[in-house]
Length: 267
Length: 176
Image 1 (tube, rainbow over the protein chains, first blue to last red):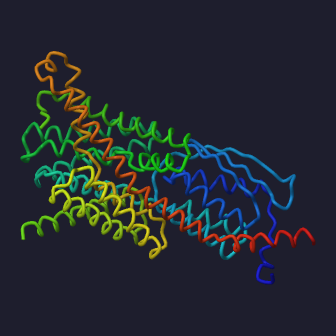
Image 2 (cartoon, each protein chain N blue to C red):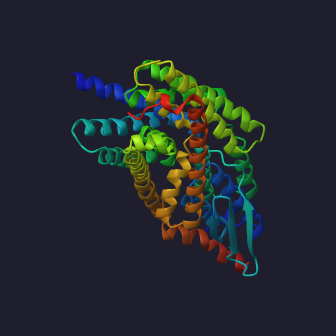
Image 3 (tube, chains in turn blue, green):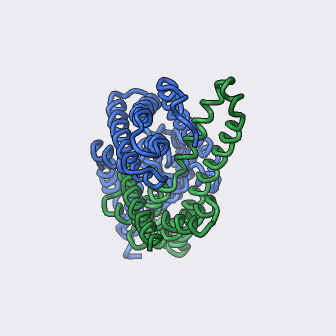
């Protein structure tokens, strides 16, 4: 028992509930599935002797914390999650932090400070992302039997759309509008490429250049949640993903009808 | 010889695509290379199976399951959750073409006159829609197999004895 003499730190359920909400909502916004939230927060709760139950939805997190030492110290809190922005590095960092708390019995204020550092972690620069996104769409274009001219068109379209999307979301407009406009601009570039006949297989450039907008993480998390039994969260994610897809389709449709639907054939 | 070159080309392109998706999703820098390698491998398996005459859906399922299973082993080595690199790796097989054709056919169907001239447009739309949905589900299943199996091993690490040991300090504080 000597080894654990430093572990007898006592914190209240409210303190832990607030910290748990911080971690949980941030994980949700970074693209974690609900099972991950559950394991990470419960792992940390064991260290301070709390019993935790979670009810995650896409929009927020309901947490209820019971103190095992003190029956009267029980609390249930809810918090909305911040804006959703996929950032998988956060999942790694929080998972490693939770193991550190569990194995090395970190002090509470030290844990909170470590989590603040994780929160301040920067995403990649938006120009790097735009460049990479262009390359990814060009690569997908090559994989679906386009030639190098098609890939170049796809690169330009995806690059411009991605930069525009980040610029629009900087002004705090609704995210869906940003996605619709980005899809419109990307299709404008690739559609002009198709009308002027750049490359042999112009359809591939049209199809693959907008793929960077696809909500891949919510779509896949939706199925994972479904399998693990978090039904309400799964439905929310499916709705969100479906609406993003609808926005992409709306942006593309508007552009294609403006350019003239007869210019595009289904091969 | 041509086939080997084609497989190699497929691997290189899928590698670049997976790395770039990793950047979009904010995968840590050290893991980007692994994401690329795993993604290249998965897409390669799909490509080879397609060359051998398998169906598109079964080939994609094989590729994504391979990514999921390899992801578990690699995750233990690099101390990262598998989702961080299996997600961008699986996205290399996203069915963009079929989704696009679904949408294009959907637009064409809004014009009744031209839809009457090409009555198979409805068939084209349904076919492409079903293909898109099935391929998306296969990708998700591939990642899920990995995530679910990994979760089990992770939970097994928290053995009952260890939990009891941690909890025992509570009893002591009660006596104090």
